[in-house]
Length: 101
Length: 101
Image 1 (cartoon, each protein chain N blue to C red):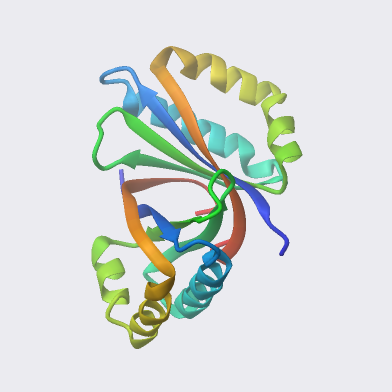
Image 2: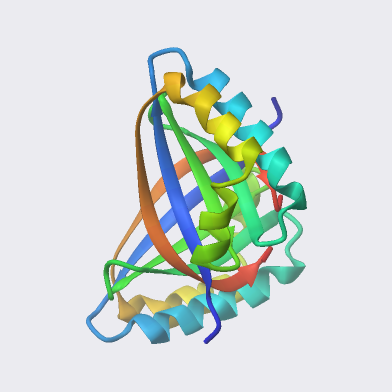
């Protein structure tokens, strides 16, 4: 079964900084529109914790994901966002398929 | 900001039953292709736990999600899958946007 590289990435923001973090992540998503290896990059806010943002990521491969981190726009986005963030954790997935992919 | 109703649903299967559960969930995803209110229904297997399946769901609204559970195909899929499942937990999200939605 051909699978993709997926992740649920949980960002915990500093108190009151979530909206700013969401804005930065939406900018990052816009930058990824032209990056073929990125299949999904969707920003979600947690319904139960006001400082948590979850990003749903699906990449063609782990290599495609790693390559994206070397892009100038990605480095700039990380630089801008890092002061808004307390912690980052991720759940690694093999994305199999379904509706919307 | 207009958001959608999102969920990460974690299924824990009985030992050795994950592949069967993935198959049932892929069938459910196929049934949802014609359901407008369902924007994303993507099946993932956990990379760290051999009995865990994660489903990425995005719905137009909570009501659209609830309505889908009343469909005959959904009821049939739940009936078939329930003997494969030990537990179901979900992370509720407000899905804001990004690439792929």
